[in-house]
Length: 449
Ligand code: GDP
Ligand code: GDP
Image (cartoon, rainbow, N blue to C red; front, top):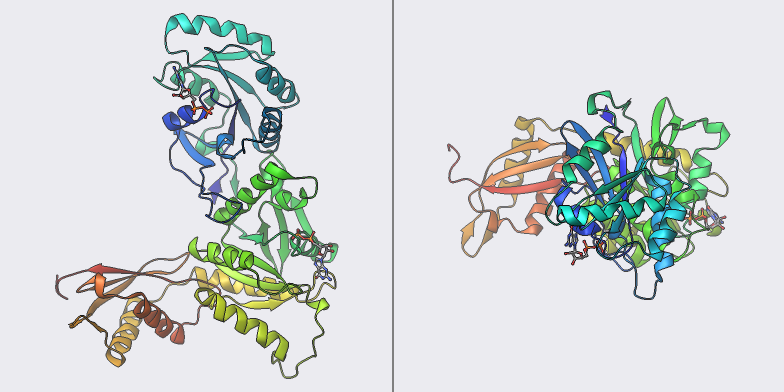
């Protein structure tokens, strides 16, 4: 069970001081966005705690705008983000430069928002400046707070006021844990089509979870009595109307969906073969330590022959080999062949997802783990620069995904290829399909320490 945090979105034209304000209040960063073309590593979501109140801040300053994006466009996107995400909006203006046309434009758009809007008259570094904040009542919102992100003036009062609008952590609604699945992949691979197939009537869609704006983006589906939460389905459905910078925002949001997910379903378009974008998405899921199932969609477009006896057809075998050769780190991921169009292969996908999540939660007993590792190192000892690697003891420190700490004489000796060998030995006994395994070498001087 986990609490759902209320979402606070900060908006404001460039240079009013949003980033500075963030740095003052932000706690743990909870979203990291991948390095890949079109997506830059950037901060976007922060969890903030204030005297027993928890909230999630969304930094619209984290959306990168090109120089060619006019101010109006930036304001439009920010307002859209606020509209989709926010439980509370912080609208930041600059007391030094005074009220501007950009502020008026943003105010105009924010008036449609149903949630509370706080105007932050920033750069009120001293009392004299703070007096000028009354000018901003003209924007038409009743809460105007003079603050200084730079020296912290007024920030406590503001946070207290925000918290008056929030439920305490212990009274936040709790949600039953479901299998949290993120459907990801390049544009046009068929994500929305698969989603629609999953939520089709025959599989009984339970609900678009009601409640806050944020809740409405996930979809609950039942399969074989198991509840699945399809994460951020709004992000999938909304596409089409979205271009330019908003599309970029949606890409970041897909990454955030992955962060909230237990399992990623990475879709590949069979008619296009395995592309660099597909590989990147798989690696991202791997690096994030998520369970992973791969579906090669649009298989109806391939002229495949039916193989008998539960075997794969040559065409499927070829596809599988390409994935294994080109993305060897995700060899553990089951690969399914689907057609959203013909609604085929979909149940198998969900079966694999259930299995992958089980693997992801799996724990190997310490005794058995150590026996497997001893046998592996005995069978193939590892020596580098004249020194032999000795593994004294292994323990599984966590699940989700299974993570093992191996105490050894010298972690530097523990070459990556040998880690992979150990992983393969573990998987011979425990195949654990669908989950990455993490192996962490640690130094220890002797077995008896
Ligand atoms: P953003 O574009 O809205 O994220 O704005 P930044 O946080 O980058 O701030 C823009 C400029 O305003 C920087 O030079 C900051 O140092 C300055 N600034 C931000 N907050 C304050 C403040 O409270 N007082 C003063 N005097 N300057 C500030
Ligand atoms: P998304 O951008 O990943 O959400 O992709 P969509 O679900 O919008 O699908 C993109 C296009 O591919 C649409 O024209 C779909 O009709 C088509 N499509 C999706 N799945 C399949 C499939 O399994 N077979 C075929 N032939 N077309 C598909």
